[in-house]
Length: 246
Ligand SMILES: NC(=O)c1ccc[n+]([C@@H]2O[C@H](COP(=O)([O-])OP(=O)(O)OC[C@H]3O[C@@H](n4cnc5c(N)ncnc54)[C@H](OP(=O)(O)O)[C@@H]3O)[C@@H](O)[C@H]2O)c1
Image (cartoon, rainbow, N blue to C red):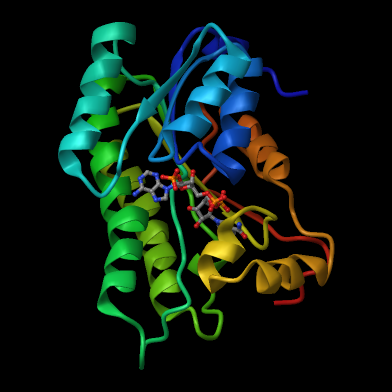
C-alpha cells in the first residue's frame, strides 16, 4: 500500500522489539525491503523474530537503561551495516505509580526508558544519518492529555512531544533534511497493560471494553510516515480506537 522503494536496503533500528508495536514495526519494515536491526532485553524473543525473518533482520540484545549497552549496539550496526538511516524509538513502558504514592524506582524506569534512552538513541542515530534519515518516536495520546493516575507516564510522553518539536527545530536550524515524526496511539492491544497494572486479568478487561488498535495499525502508520516524499514532514500521527472516548 505504501511505497517505500526509496528506502530499499536502508538500515532501520527499532527499539523494544520483543513484543507489541516494536515487533510489528520490525516485520513491516522488513517486508518493505529495509535492513532491520532491533533490540530488547528478552533475547530469546528477538532471536526468534530474526530467525523467522531471515536475511536483513538482526536481533541485538540491549538494555536501554544502560548507556554502554546502547553504545555497543550502535557501534555494532556501524561496523556491520554502516549505521542507521531510520530510527524507531519504540521501547517504552508505564507503571501504575501515582504521584502521591508511587515508588521512585518505577518513576525512574519510565523516565530512563521513555525519555533518556530515546534521547541517547536519537543522538547516536543522527551521527550516522548524514542528510537523509528519519527519526520516529512512538509517543502516546498520553502525551496530548493527562489520563488520571498516569502522571509520570503521561509526563514522559509529554516530554516526547517536546523532544519531537525540539529536534525538528534543531534539524531545520542546521539545514539538515533529516525528518522527525511521532506516532501517538491510544489503546493498543499489547503487553503494555499487563506491565502497567501487574495483572493479566486487569489487562484483559482494559482491552475488552472496545476493539483496540492492534500493533499492526501503528506499524502501518510508521510506513505512511516513511512513504512521504522528501519535502513532506508529518509531525505527529494521533490515532485512537474508534470507540475510545477519552
Ligand atoms: N499499548 C498501548 O496502549 C500504547 C499506547 C500508546 C503508546 N504506547 C507506546 O508504545 C511503545 C511500545 O509499547 P507496547 O504497547 O508495544 O508495549 P509492550 O508490548 O510491553 O512492549 C514494550 C517493549 O519495550 C521493551 N523495553 C522495555 N524496557 C526496555 C529496556 N530497558 N531496554 C530495552 N527494551 C525495553 C520491551 O522489551 P524487553 O522487556 O524484552 O526488554 C518490549 O519489547 C511504548 O513506547 C509505549 O509507551 C503504547
